[in-house]
Image (cartoon, rainbow over all chains, first blue to last red; front, side):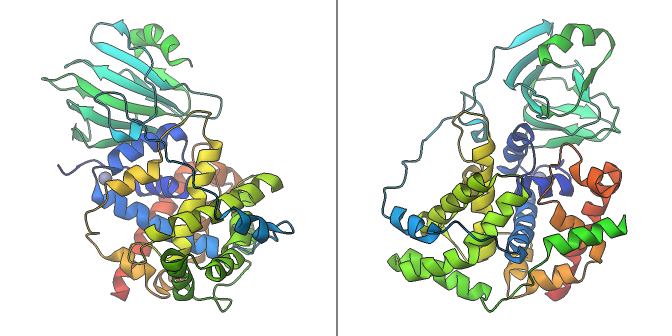
Length: 209
Length: 201
Ligand SMILES: [Zn+2]
């Protein structure tokens, strides 16, 4: 399965630098797990990170920092916790809890994984029935959608499992779930959401914005 | 705008690379830690990286005690994970950078246990790199030469992106550039970096 829609280079750069919100990071990680090309792009950006680190002028550590570190070397390492993703979900959701699936209208399900906070993007699981349009657009912020099952289509083409849709502040398109299976996606968004018309009043409270 | 960038350039790039410790030397020290738990090699790594990691944390807004803690944790992880260091995949500085970055992310994460995203990505990445650019980037001086081939402004933006929050347009606010401009410049910087690496091959 080769993905046909990828995150932008600059989003991969921010992923590599560790400066993407957690919600976006999870969606990108979902895509990376199945996309060697984007993993290579992240690696390259990490090389730049190595160069950045190497060129930083050092800050002196507290007195005895090396001795303190040496003294801890033989302490047993913490046992890694093995966390499973929720059933049927990708490994990138390991340790996350999916909130209750709410169905404001027929054919649309929304479950919160990470609620949005003042300076944090929200993360949601969406279920969109064939023919339904996706409920929301983030305007003024990054919006990422990783397709887990089913497919949807917008002006850019058809998105299938493994694909990632990235939209920004300028986009105003209407993705529609294709016939067949219910489209299941991970969806992260920062900034205010703007919903389409009548759907807005129904869905807005569920997103907590 | 350009003055701002050059001011930032000065603060990001104060130390010039090299200072007698070569990347190959650092990679050998990590290998020594891995193969025989060599404390002298670890002390050498600590001397080189710990002050830089502390600066990295401070630049990203950590308090002095937090930066000190995260530096300790980073160096401890260097000791514990040394066996997993693969010089074919990453240079010493790149490897330490990813450890420091991940520990910072964990520290900032909302109070909830979650799996290590980097390890999930790692586990999925058995396939060899298709394009060989990483090897060139990690070859002695390869990335430095490629970065040097970028116009100053693009190279600086690329480096700044490691210190600014994406979602809130911090770089854009700081440089007085619209976010869209910052993004397209970063995109161009990455593209030119790839071209410069390809030219080396
Ligand atoms: Zn991709």
